Length: 120
Figure 1 (cartoon, rainbow, N blue to C red):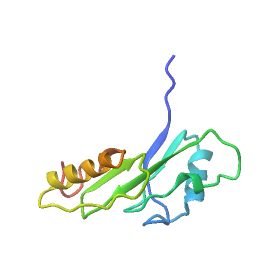
Figure 2: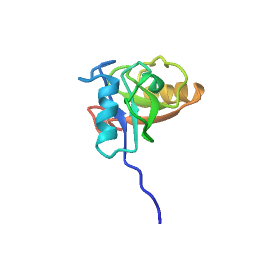
Figure 3: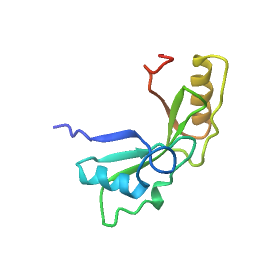
Figure 4: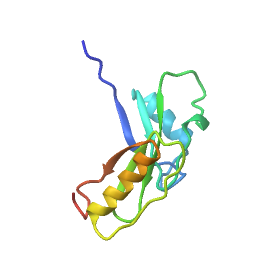
């Protein structure tokens, strides 16, 4: 039988515009049945190895950053360092440039808020 995993790949902390610290956010998800969480703060890489849940856990924290060069936001997962967000003339160019920058940094990219003002 397949095992499904419950997680959130887009969460902010007080390291950007969230309202709780990384340990508080991670503990909430761990305590509420989630298997994994990506702390994807705006234009900042929150290092999951610095987040102490205060107890042993199999809960997975994923290294991530939300590149936010304006209204268009792209997540980068598995990054070793912060990737600077890149602006461009069109929505498609912004997405492509930032996805390319994430891949060049060894990460995996995803588009956030695809139906926001600019809708993909």
